[in-house]
Image (cartoon, rainbow, N blue to C red; front, side):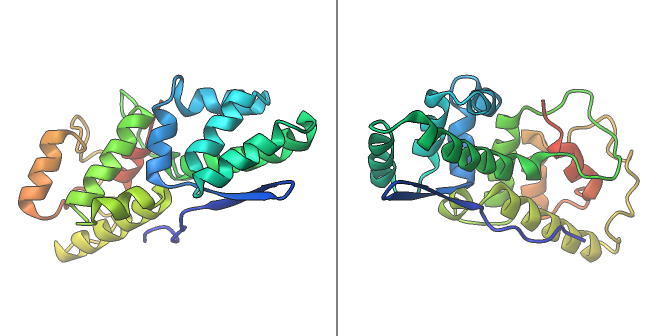
Length: 210
């Protein structure tokens, strides 16, 4: 069964009279990973209370960019401690919401020899959501990683049942030696209209990253 639907996380952040909402959409995830050092570097910087990292996450993820700038300008005129802790908690919550769906699930599963980089994982999600789920690009960009993964799991369940299989019935090693998420495989899936090999284990393999 697909996992429970998790809407795009929206984290409130208020500093003085200014309040913004940080949204963990795929667009934000891609933009953050594209920054120097990516999300891993941002996480480290936020944990160390580096203003550059905090500002980058707030500016990138705020649903109201103008209000985000006003919040940051206000924070700059007050003691750092009044801003840093609240901002740190909100930014770490946002990054956690982005990363959680990409982590391996609780049950053990085989891992690929070459883990997929996080940026490539986001690319594959966008590609599958637009070509396999037929979502408009604007909706995909605004959806969270969790929403897209959940929708792909549900679609995989439907295609497996349509093929006369039950979800999880395909052996975990059935796709061993092949990367079902290459561009060539995606073209094959688009030509077929469905991917019967895309079972839960396959999704877990997609989630493995560096």
